[in-house]
Image (tube, rainbow, N blue to C red; front, side, top):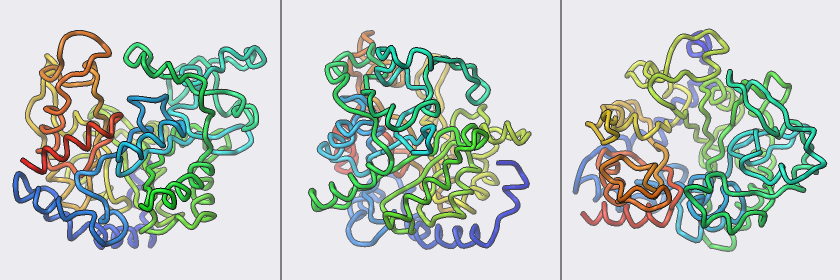
Length: 391
C-alpha cells in the first residue's frame, strides 16, 4: 500500500474506524493497565458481549494450530490447539492453487511442509521463482490443482527443533480454507463453545500479479458461510497493509496488520515505491493511519521489547501504549517453548529442541500490556496466563 492508498480512504474506511471505536474503544482504556488493576479487568473479559470483546485477554492464539506438537496447518494441529484450550486457532495461512482454491500452507513453496519431493510425478514442477524479491526454489501451490495437492501429505517444517513432530509426518493432507470454515462450525457445535479462527493472506501482491487475487476469494467464502460481519469469529490478518485495506472494503470482519522487523518494508510498499518501513508504521502517525482501516496490529515480539546485542531483552518500547491510545489491539508473534526461539536469558542449556524458561518469558511479555500472543504451544500459554492473572 502506498501513501495515496493510505490517504484515499473511502466511506467504507470511515465506517471501519467507527466500528473499531465501537468494538475496542471502551476496552482500550483498560487494556494497557499494569499489574493488579489490569488483571482484574482481564478476569472479566470474555463474559458476555460479541466480537473481539468476547475474547479473554490476554488472548492465547494457537499459531498454525498446535505446531509445537503436530505438523503445522493440518487438522491434527488445529484440533489439538482446541483440545489444549486455545482461544483462537490461526487456521490458516492462505495461498491459492492453480485452479483458484485457497489452501492452508505457511508459504506457497511447499517443499519444506509436504512430502511433494517424494512424488516422482511432480519432480518436473520444481522450479525457482522470485517471491517478494527473493529467489526461492521448490514447489509452489499455484502450479498445482487442488486435486493434485490433495495427493500430498504434510510434514514437520522444523524437524531439528521438533523431532517428535516427525512421528506424524504423512498423516494429514493440506486443508482448504473452505474446509476450515466448515470445520469451525462443526467444532463449535461439538465443543459447545464458539471456535475462532485467524487466517492470513500470504504474499497478496505476488498472487495478484499472477491473476490469483486473494482478498476477493477470502471475502466470497466468508460471505458464503455467513462469516463476514464485525462480530464474526474470524479475524483477518496480512503483512501487506493494502491487502487489509482491500478486505476492509469487502467484509466487516476484524482486521489486523502484521508488522515485521522495524527495518522491514511491506512488499506492497516495495512494489508501490513507498519508502516507508515498519518503523514508520509504528509511530503515532502510522498507528493512527492503521486505525483508520484495521482494529489491531500483529507485531513481532521484538517491536514490543527490543533485544540487546547479546540476545537478551532490553526495555519495552512505547508500542503497546501508542497502539492502545488509538484503539488498536496488539497480538504479537511468536512464543515458542524451544531454546532457539527464546530471549537469551530464558534459555536453558544449548540443545536446539530443549525447552527454556518459557513461563518467565511469557510473564515479561504479558506485563507490557499486550492483548494476546501467538504461540506454538497453547497449553503453555494458558498456564502462563493463569500465572500472570493470579500474580
